[in-house]
Length: 267
Image (cartoon, rainbow, N blue to C red; front, side, top):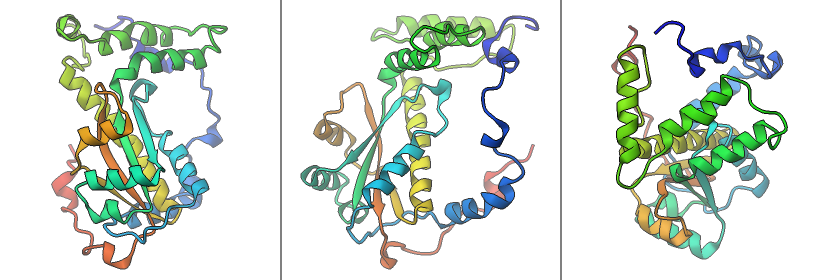
């Protein structure tokens, strides 16, 4: 309904805090685009590595790039496990069903969905944004973080909050455009894996930009990997990424993609 206070809609009246030079601008076409095109076009799923780890400082820089990935409400509901212990690395590789992309990788990184941490992440985020409460959030940001996010994210074992959320979203949607979820626990699982995957893509592109190869693996024993790494049952492994210097035989063929118009719909 027009005129109804809506935090998402009202965000545009907040003052900008990012300088223009720190955002994409036309100069990027010359300074950034060539390197980005080369990075995105050269990134391939490498199936065989030479076994040597990526230099620590480089992989750590790639991980810093990973956590700059887009994140819904900036909750960053994921964790990234850089498996550095040799024994654990061998065991994780075995739990990747012995795939060469895991057994020959110099490094293994486990990407984990942590929707169960949304409340603690929300508290940490608001502490940072308010300088530990010294500078209270302004509306509509305060309303969004104090009311909207808890309404969308809160859940329980018996599904009581899910029913409340379903009714509230249905009722509001009768009057105006409204988000349709997450409603069920399954929706939250999808949400978490989406957030984790965004970070994983940032990580793999950064690895490529630093001159190394990677391979995302989803055919893995997620539960056994979680148990090995001490990840709680409320979290889920999204994927394992192998990283390192690839070998020529690690690319099994030319890159094949469906035609542009088979995937992109201009409406």
